[in-house]
Image (cartoon, rainbow, N blue to C red):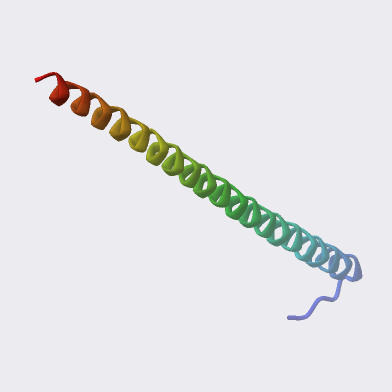
Length: 77
């Protein structure tokens, strides 16, 4: 390409600089979003794990109460 107009050449350089800067900003933002998603996924997984632990405790409590009630019921027979 033959750019005989120096102003146009400067405009192209400015535009290419702007595009490069904008592209880098987008890449940085995407990386940041990716990190946030990882943090979010880790937080969700931690909550699931806590929920499973709570469910197990509740199930153990329920089973213990049920066993106690069954024993008491069988003794009365």
